[in-house]
Image (cartoon, rainbow, N blue to C red):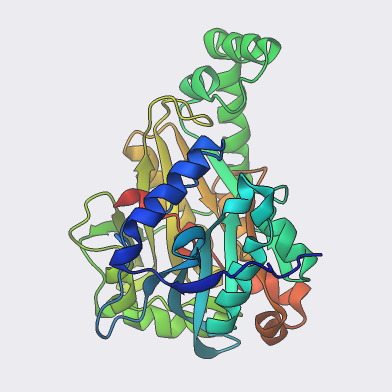
Length: 381
């Protein structure tokens, strides 16, 4: 179904000499009507997670070249994961762009890119991808990769602003009228608050004696928590202090790092940030709090999520969102007053990795994936 291209195309690591060709590739994609986000970095040194001596989490860039002309690109983020209790180096496949998007003569470049990535790193996964209607997940399904949707959750903090400015829902004149009516009459505010409050009261998750503190970085306490939590997850990225301080650099003030304690015991942590963008196609100009990452023993997920949501709400955001794959973390969000929404955040893995997670339909419920495991941190540089 996806034949290997017959044209003389080779895949090579991105180097400085290729920068002009990458610029030309990006221009051709834009001119051909590709989505605006389909633009590959115009530097061979990644802004996000460049490879460094001794660093265990890093990005690498690769190019498909036809006589020096770039016909495709991809990136791999290498990171240590615990898979069935064994720590292994795993690759995250992202930003695969093919000239086939705008020129059908190069429609087979996509499979060439993926096969090259698998040759370099057989234990690979893809995450996010924007929904099953996109070309990459369709190709992965055709190649029989194991997959599932990572659930998406949201909590409305300011219903009036949400109803008036949530562009992703205001898609017809009737919807806009109904949402405006709900906002200005107060019925929407009352309904949303009542529904969320009922969920919190009926499944109460805040616990007495739990406190939250903002920390500048991750220390020995995070290493201790990682060792405690690792056995509870079928697949989880290594989240020790060293790795976390690379992913969430102490000097980056866009990340709010929360340490949740019960007495002297660290129950868990969360990293949150605020997404604020004028005229966002989904969120308009809403202040959106995002739970980027978190860790705790599964049984401690409810108070960790409840306190994290409370901390974000106190910062004045209008809406809080989170993607969580683990079944217990999903229930924790529901207990904290969140509702499930439509997700386009897909996890997919080839047979060699999925075979380590059998039976997959059961093990996927105890895998721990969040926005931080994909490329969701790049926008906070």
